[in-house]
Image (tube, rainbow, N blue to C red; front, side, top):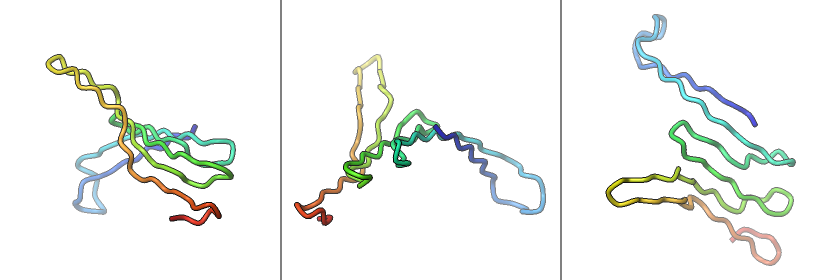
Length: 93
């Protein structure tokens, strides 16, 4: 696991002190080949990178935390962002 903290400042006088700061932390996970497999975002969502073979990227998706609304019990599991396929000779299509 690798943690990353980003600090963002509002625009203004670049030489003066920041008026407002926004800090957020990201948590990254990697497989044994060094491929990033997931990133936990500050809002609770998780980006997943799915690989096959020796590290070929197959899919990127985002998983939302399970949301419970007392009115309609909304449940969201995940959304596919990108999907890559390869032909029989491993050329991307």
